[in-house]
Image 1 (cartoon, rainbow, N blue to C red):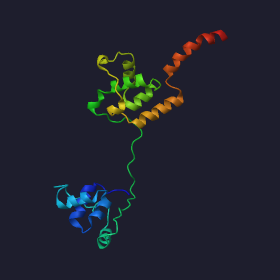
Image 2: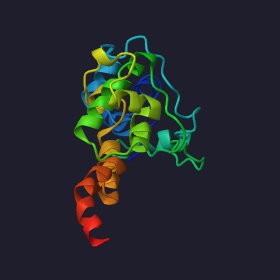
Image 3: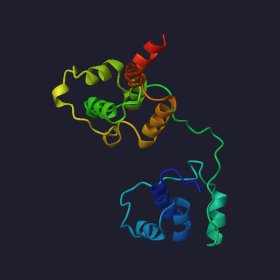
Image 4: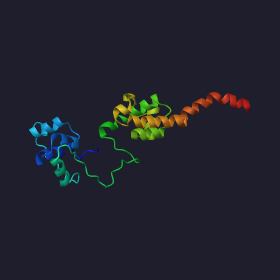
Length: 195
């Protein structure tokens, strides 16, 4: 069941302005009945301003009256027909200033641990540039002596799911082209013999 916007503030308003039971409020707000009781006792959410679910279009007065008359009834959230926001799938994502210095460490980790990833995939995962990847690979980065390979997932630069998807794409494609370029060198004498 979908929950109302700001569940605790909604629970505060319902406790203060209705005669609903703690169980009804808890079920509607996705809280435990004891937490709602603590709100009513003034132990939790002290000083929190209640959020009116009627004014926000999450409930109607009739729905509240229906549930106040029968303690067995449960409040039903109004269905909103407004379009929901969609997460952006394109474009660069914002990296906080404090995490930007971790990008070369993440690049070094990916180059060392997953050499099959292409530079473009690393750029998308971490939000870095190809010249940065190349400078880390060649150890010509301005801060090369301080770069320590660290997992980008633990650094918060990408999610585990994103990394797994990139690895699956790399394995399906057959790995990075530079890795493949090393393999034909071993088979060149055989090619020359056939010519």
